Length: 129
Length: 129
Image 1: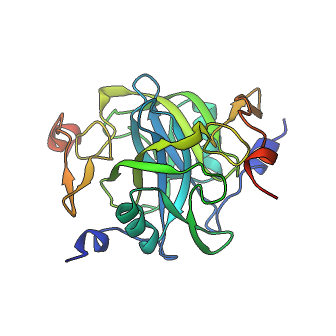
Image 2: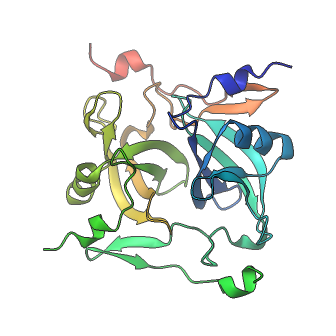
Image 3: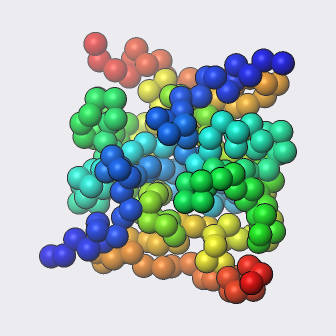
């Protein structure tokens, strides 16, 4: 089996590409994270979003702690082959570690970033201590 | 006037953040590009998407050649303050330099990236020679 589709990706110097997760039903952009070669490969083979955690420097199976798995429905790259867009089913309807639907909850308004989306579930109840 | 909202952004080592443009009406993700401090500042002050072109190493007023300006409707950042999401009105209904609606037209299918969206307008007629 050839992996030429993987070779076509224009990885950054750090071997990463930004990956966007979008709710396949509502179109809401849920988050942006990063993938390395292995993460993209596993995202496709396991049909769920798997990222590279830059802070922890390891593979991050989205939902591994919270259960908020992102099931893959479609995967695309852009014209420059240096960005990934996934259509996902967000289990639990929560993508953000703050307990919100989307990580993009800070809106620019009146020269400030204002949190405009509700917390659906407290992080304390999402993550086991 | 304070620029503390700009200071809150977690810029990369290169002084950039990824910025997603999403159609404010259809929810289609149109493109992902990059912004530096000046680009984000001008995006807000001019109310249109302005990126930093990494290949040309200069400010890129989206639509400056093609007329395909992205008028800003809303701007958000994510929980980590290291990614930007814009709701935009895409003039000309074409975001991609290939003449397609979205840059994300390459879909993973059968172990290949397949171009699945139509070219709305030939690039030859978009860009003046």
